[in-house]
Length: 93
Image 1 (cartoon, one colour):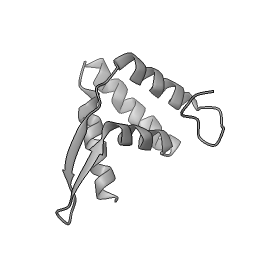
Image 2: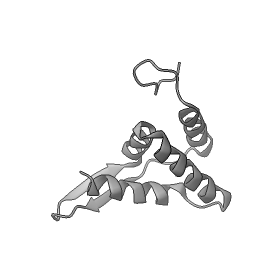
Image 3: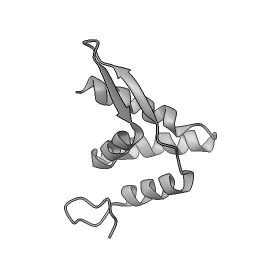
Image 4: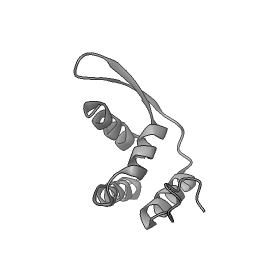
């Protein structure tokens, strides 16, 4: 059973794909300083973004997968996308 299984459920196809992608890419941990609306600075690392991706709705996961696949296809840096998602986490905080 995957170490990232939530509530003892079998990991979804997305989780399996995402964990394989992350393992294959061996992305370095990133830490971003993101300013919130009230001027507060939030420190968000890529691990927090990855955890939130794994917990979001399957419809959102499908959109995220599509975007990651497009970025990977053009040899882009997926961490730029994770930074974008981190900004969204701060905005919803």
